Image (cartoon, rainbow, N blue to C red; front, side, top):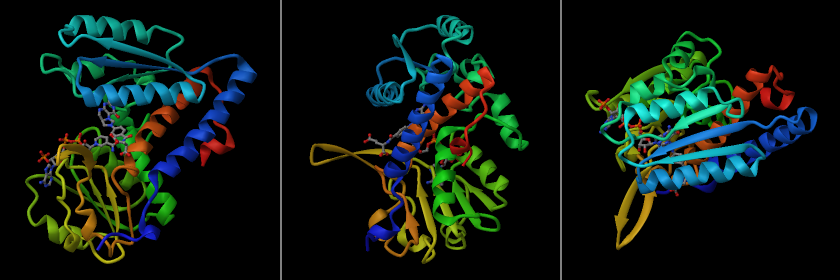
Length: 298
Ligand SMILES: NC(=O)C1=CN([C@@H]2O[C@H](COP(=O)(O)OP(=O)(O)OC[C@H]3O[C@@H](n4cnc5c(N)ncnc54)[C@H](OP(=O)(O)O)[C@@H]3O)[C@@H](O)[C@H]2O)C=CC1
Ligand SMILES: Nc1nc(=O)c2c([nH]1)NC[C@@H]1CN(c3ccc(C(=O)N[C@@H](CCC(=O)O)C(=O)O)cc3)C=[N+]21
C-alpha cells in the first residue's frame, strides 16, 4: 500500500518556505548594508547529473538576491590548478561560501581539496574543522542534507529526545553528520552500513529510519514499524521503458503504514539546496558580524 497524502512529508513545500524567508532576509540586509552574500560553486568535469545540480544551485542563489559565481573546469584540471582556484576564492571578499561539487574526477584528491577550503566559507560543512565542531557540539557549518533532514523531522515530530533512530549509511556527507545531529537532539542513534547484521530487525525497533545508502528499494515495508517516520535520502536514477526517473532507497509502495515519509523526488533533495543557501547566509552573517534575525533563529 502506498502512503496516504497525510503521511507525506512535503520537503519541496518546506524548502520553498525556507527559501522565501531567506530571500526576505537577503533583501533586508542589502537594503541596510549594501552588502550582497556570494556563493561560489566549482564543477570539475562534465558529469551530467552534477551539471544539473550546479545549474539548480546557480538559479536558486540568484533568485534570492545572492551573487552566484560558477566555475566550470575541464575534467583534466590538475590538483594544483584546483588548489590555486580555491586559494583565490578563499581570499575573495565577495565570496562567502564555497562548494566543490562531488564526486570529483578520480585523479583528484577530494580530502585535500576540501581541506583547502577556508572553514568559515565551507558551506557544505565537509572540512574537518566543521566536522570536528559538529562532533563536539560546537557552532559549525552543518552539512546541508542532514541539516535538511533534521528540519523535516523537527517540523513533523517536535521534540526528538528519547526517540530510537536508525541511520543507514555512514558517509562523511550524510550518515555520519546525521548521526551527530540526532545525538545532539538526545535521540538514541544506531548507525548501520553494508556490514550491519540483521538490518531489518534493527529497523523494526526504530521510531525513525533515515536511509542514505544509494540502494533503490533497500528498506522494505515490513522493516517499518506501523506509525514510524521514514526519511529517504537516496537519489537513484532508474531507466525504465526508455525514460529516466529518480527513486529513493525505500520501497515506497510498501510503506503505507508509515506514520510519515519523505517522497523522492520532492522530499529531502529540495531541502539540501535550501540549506546550502541558508549556510551561505550564515557564513555571510558571521563574516560581517550581522546577528541572525528572529526568523532565522527558528
Ligand atoms: N537528497 C540529497 O540531497 C542527497 C542525496 N544523496 C543520496 O544519498 C545516498 C547516499 O549518499 P552518500 O552518503 O554520498 O553515499 P556513499 O556511497 O558514500 O555511502 C553509502 C552508505 O550506505 C551504506 N550502504 C550501502 N549499501 C547498503 C546496504 N545494502 N545496506 C546497508 N548499508 C548500505 C554504505 O555502507 P559501507 O560504509 O559499509 O560501504 C555507506 O555507509 C545516495 O543515493 C545519494 O545519491 C546524497 C547527498 C545528497
Ligand atoms: N559538494 C557537494 N555538495 C552536495 O550537497 C552534493 C554534492 N556535492 N554532490 C551531489 C549530492 C546530491 N545532492 C542533491 C542536491 C539536490 C537534489 C534535489 O534537489 N533533488 C530533487 C530533484 C531531483 C531530480 O529531479 O533530479 C528532489 O529530490 O526532489 C538532490 C541531490 C547534493 N549533493
